Length: 472
Image (cartoon, rainbow, N blue to C red):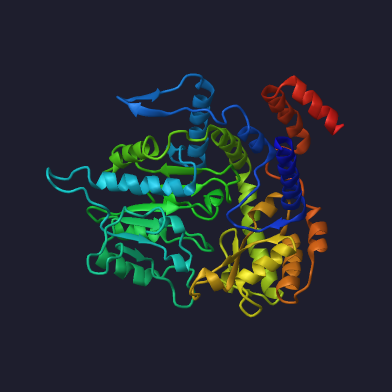
């Protein structure tokens, strides 16, 4: 029975691998395929090990032995990430973007209570500003998500004291900065959270930073870059615009393993300097014990790749997104965003499909034709149950070598499915067969001996001999 279960599982894994990696076009904007180098790092010895550590009396204390290598990995990764962001303080231990956000919320609450008087009750955040979930805001920054329990409740409405960025009436994907200025001066939030999951425009970080720079105390500015982390600098550089904290996922446009990260521009002479101490303590022991050392090692490899290839990668992603949006529009599909500015400033393209069916139905139909997307409730929809839109991202297929002209061809295949109700599965499989080798990493010829070395160091000679025999 055990052997049968194992073989059945392996068969299903192989079938899914072939389908997703060789036969499908993946357009989900929150996903990517890591390089073979990154994947092999992820399965190496640190996977499953522990390396708990914290700062005590000015020294970093580790509580396990046998961790010299992973200690080096963590320090090396801090340097690489600091180079990527252009700041010196990076916290690597969150294992997801949502955890990174929750760490910040815990830390800000702790920081705000540092100077409370004796007998004064521990308080939550008085007021938080974020993007409305129905206007593209990310779930993790909502009271129903990671913000849960960290913000005060209005005694009259019994709802959490959260206000949303106002959006333009003619373009609900962009912030209305005129109304925002009035709202902020009136309400004076303690924490401002930028970032979205339906993300096609820059956020008004510099506008807000200039608006609140003389407030005392001034709000903390946080930017959740989960979706656009891999476009840092090309799409937007929040630290240069006045953000205090950036969080993010490392597996969307940043082409690493599934983890989270926190970076900050807070300096030791900043009035909020002690917030960094609270962030570190909420990372460990506040939110993590084992911080998944296999993916930590893999993130180092991915960051080497990103720092080396980011200029070309970021440029291609943004070019391909605009070309894809334009081609979809030319095919007769309604594309959200401002046509005058190319519909999008990120990797995402959002289409409105309600003329042909619900987003839920059409996303399923696209999947049946090997085009993987996700349905999306648009700002004027009541819920995700009957979504009007489909959200797509170009980052993964850009890395597999698709260019602007290829995305134009893909737009025609999508129109065949959405508008004309055609079955194009075999055409999609044939189309995908042209894009199997990954870019922005070492070539297969360069990577192969290195991957072989990892396998040789990881598995027994007997197993490797049997594998080699089987492959022959």
